[in-house]
Length: 116
Image 1 (cartoon, helix red, strand yellow):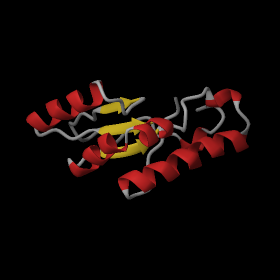
Image 2 (tube, rainbow, N blue to C red):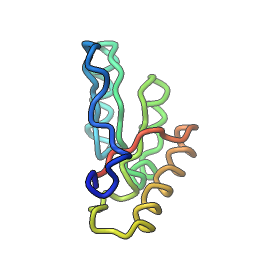
Image 3 (cartoon, one colour):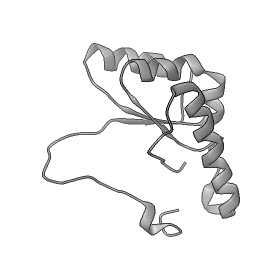
């Protein structure tokens, strides 16, 4: 994907800041995501969750908890395909469909996308 869309990738942030970014991919699910949220809350830590659209549709309450607790919800496609093997139109549909369900559940459109 990076070779296909080189101008659209951010690989790292400013190097002058000493910080760590926590991110979690492929959720939400009902087993591990609530446990992760519990640990993050215990330690006062925020994270970015790159969620899969069909899982957002299946587990909206977990995503609502992410938002309520101050985490960032970001796009990780609709159903986690290999986007490099898809046409640009099918890639776009993956992103738009996931973005739409995230908007309906989280209340905002994600600004970040991580390819599966």
